[in-house]
Amino acid sequence: MSENDPSRLVREARAVFQSGGPDNPHRRGLEQASRGDYLAAVASFEESIAAVPDAPWSYIALSHVLIESGAPDRAARALLDALDRTPSRAVALRESIATGLCTVGDFEHAVRVFRDVLVEEPDRSTAAVGLARALLDQADEMRSEAAHLLVDVEDLELDEQLLEAAIDAAPRVPGLYRRLAEALLRRGDRTRAIAVLQVALAHDPDDRDALGLLAVAIADESDVGRPLRDQPEQLIELIERALTVDPENGDLLVRRARLLGRGNSAQAIEAWRAVVAREPDVALWHRELGDRLAEAGDFEAAGVAYDRAVALGFDVY
Image 1: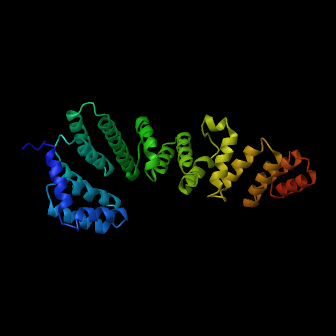
Image 2: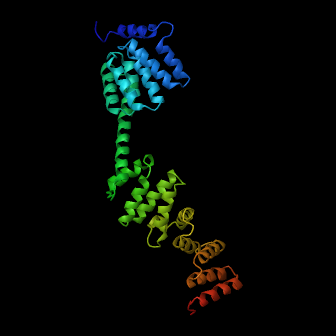
């Protein structure tokens, strides 16, 4: 009788469910799996396979509990064993096996099985969708692998195409945003490095490594790129976030104070007070504080700040 005879699967299913009498290992395994006792379920399904080794059902059930118990490699092997025992015309079962193979990351076999199913039933839309997903997942898996390679490269060099692909993959690869930003900073591209770190913080606002690197990238008052230069409020926000992990960074404190000096006087005064508290022996910072106090009309406090600036050697013109 041909292996494509559907009655073969019916006979095998009957054999599986009748083996072992009242204490049927396959049924017992299903009950154990339903209550989360995966170790016992694995043993039961292996017993069922030993009783009826040519039926695919227990292999498939075994793969499910192996997936749940965190053993994807063994699950893939069980699915391939089930596939070897499944006729090509049993398209629904083969499609289910292909879906399981995608779950465990065996895209190569999954794609092959989905294609075989579509040869048998060219209009089977669920298999077509499954094949499309397997191909897309495979591409995503490849991008992820490539991204992990970039994390481990000591001296990372990036062209535009690779940078774009890496940024796309970075949310799935811990540490990649940091490596990309570091590589960009090494080649002097602070504008792009800051942009990469902004994307990183959009995914994880509390990433202390990204915030620390951001502090390094924006502490220098040289060019940070036109988008930030034209949006001082956004730059101030980034500086505030960087200060959460590096609150004693004098360069960041001065940067914030100078940016705030263009706007709200009360905020600017507090910012310069923070600078003076951090570096009390710098005459220029006392002069800056005095200017902000004078702008706010607090001439007595401004005079104290100016006097301190002079005492520290500031020349009054």
